[in-house]
Length: 379
Image 1: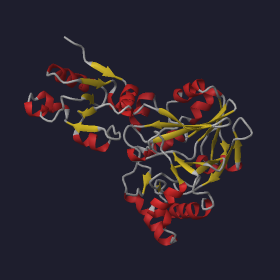
Image 2: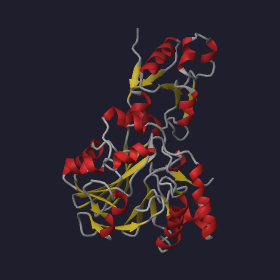
Image 3: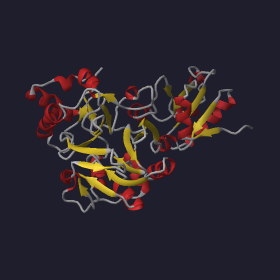
């Protein structure tokens, strides 16, 4: 009998990007599917829980297409293999996602945002989490901004694009994913930067971002201005490159602003955010490209595969960014506290502060699920 084909997360992403006609059949239970699933533009996804296939009910197959490839997804790759086998016997063109959602949660995809003789800027998209990190490269040297847990991704990137990682920066103390920052600097011998406001009370070895108004990457032409942009957290910092690119951490998103309630001080931090939006960033030009650390909707990925938008467009489309009345802005933003918080965020923050050590298996488990750091999406 023919063997069931299985594909890796990377192969699945390639198929999704090339516009191949495929359908994702997710066989996890309905709650898990609704909470967190594989998404893509123009991607058809269906949810039929695994146990329906065990009941031998022919109705289960009624809505499944015969004219497209069906990629079957489960939590870790076991159940999907079994369902793929059943469908194959019935003549469907099918394959199983190797490692399931667990593998998808570990997949990172780099895209070049900008490149000239002096600067290369790469966005690394961790699609399952909506987490974005960046490599700023000049003259054979590089800075990694907001690295996620899998540090091999960045080491590999440095090899491919032939640069040495000199600086590693976290824009703030992340609550929805485990940072790779401290481990990456240890591995490559770089310097780790984070705001002292974020790292106070920890034993982290770091350079305080608040002492640097600029960091030079390799070539003298590329200077990264570090701008304190409190709001999402008190020590949140954004990075301005050449007055053209604002790497905004969790402060400004393509479709919203960073939620200020995770520290339990929603009102005070919302006031900080007001000051950041209407004073700190007000002189930045409209044609400055905002590149955030997260996105919450697949539609925010543009045709070039990049999550980013011109500041002028964000100011125009983002209702909250036009709300200059401080009291109602603060009220609107602080109400984010009623949103569901990122799962396991207290434990993740403790790991990022160096106060809690967990093994690889627990770390992966903690990160599973969507990110919930963005609020106030327009549309």
